[in-house]
Amino acid sequence: PTTYRLIDGKQTAEEIKVEIAAEVAQRKAQGLKVPHLAAVLVGHDGGSETYVRNKVLACERVGFESTLIRYEDDLSEDELLAKVAELNNDPEIDGFIVQLPLPAHINTDKVIEAISPNKDVDGFHPMNIGRMVAGLPALLPATPSGIVELLSRHGIKTSGKHCVVIGRSNIVGTPVSILLAKNLDTGNCTVTLCHSRTQNLAEICRTADIVVAAIGRPEFVTADMVRPGAVVIDVGTTRVADPSKKSGYALKGDVNFAEVAPLSSSITPVPGGVGPMTIAMLLLNTLRAAKGEIY
Ligand code: GUN
Image 1 (cartoon, helix red, strand yellow):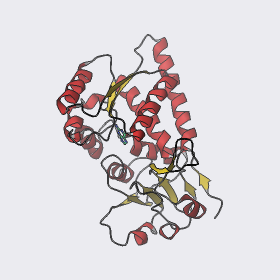
Image 2: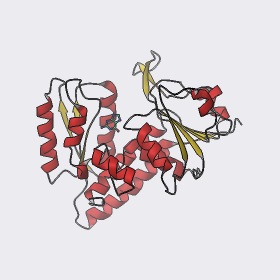
Image 3: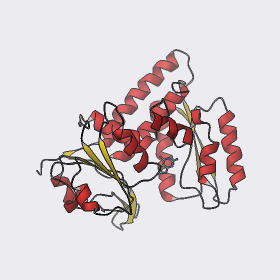
Image 4: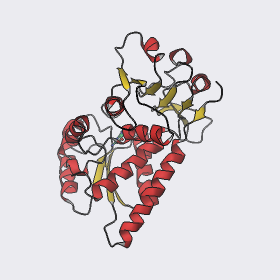
């Protein structure tokens, strides 16, 4: 059908931010502390600068405090670990993120493990991942929970459906596979997790009721890989040079939208799909951390 539904993540994220802002205002009126998110940005990666700026702006929009901590990319691992320890112990800070990727001389796993699980609003700490897998209360990674929330708020039924996830990263593919397979209102999927070594990828994708593309390869998912009527969630955000844009680049998803959209029943655009949801869920995690809802 050429009558597909565009899943507007920007609008859904706005709705969530309105809900968060109302709760913050209510808490403020009760004399409670306003949630405070800190973000650590190392170096000058263009994408990371944009993401962190958008996270700080989103904090202002919902009435959170925010602190941006910037370092040049020659920062040592020990200096970064010292800042993490300081943020862990700062009672004013409810949650913080260290924006990834980090420079190659810094051990990312070591930095993530140094973050207090109760302030780990990215949900990247092994404690939060383990608790998520076990079905215990946890801070959940923002992009996977944003995808679940998008499906839920668009009334897309998942129970018993076959969901094919393409990409097994720690921050999207692996956790979204786990969440969608769980016995939750939006879950109970039969999940297939595909990756770079998968054989017969196109054939497997064609059996999906829901496709989640999270490989970071622009326009990787083509029409021959999608069954008519499938739901398509595009997590890709690769910058591709485009002289016609004033930024000099365009954001490309992992799905060839022009080809795939007319086949799908519903599809997320890039930009304006999953990306804004990631930020909304980060704010929600920060509110939960501030309320001590999890730990
Ligand atoms: N890099 C790509 N996605 C993310 C994210 O959600 N959080 C952080 N901190 N870094 C990222």
